[in-house]
Length: 192
Image (cartoon, rainbow, N blue to C red; front, side):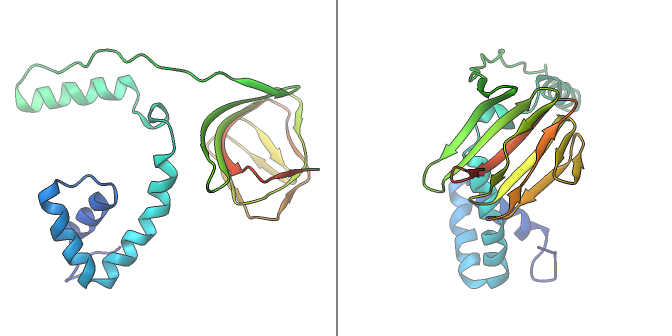
């Protein structure tokens, strides 16, 4: 949403915080009243909801900032406030296990949405491994974390993102180098 005379930065921020359920209770009713009267802000709220729903199903460890960022932030706040830095106790991580689902292909389940028939997972291909050809049963989103991945005629590098529409087919998915990716896909995909 772009800031205009009627929709300043405060409205944009408050609608975003409202969507995240991050407003103090006393402020939420004011935003609700504004949303009832403002079509532009209602549209903005509706555009935020799918993204927020996608992240809600992810485990918090995936979205948590690394300890080094928390340490820098704590030092900066302490410097600015003149108080001693707050150092939270180290967190114990519970790791789900990698599962070898086929030779050279391992997955680590992050989240499952049975109502929407979606799954989020980390997928690791060993060097020289092919993933089976498949037809997408829903939207597939892939973010490559490391290595190189070839999907038909497209070569992906770390940081690349690709989206496939329902019904489309990946005829060949393979990695010469080995790779790891975040994959959000339909549980209705059809292997060929």
